[in-house]
Image (cartoon, rainbow, N blue to C red):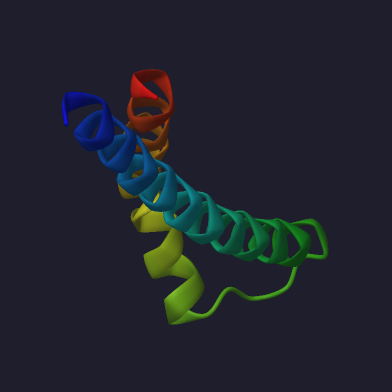
Length: 72
């Protein structure tokens, strides 16, 4: 029974990790888009500026993903 619970817990963590990785890929794509705008001297939108302001949250997300991965 304990082995079954451990396996189920690992599967749940793996699913969570995969979901977080998908979110991280989306965020990386957004960051690349903003970086391209900056390199091309294009004006940043309000949403772009908000995204840049939220980069601290992205760091926290990365730490969460690393913690989940380490616990598998």
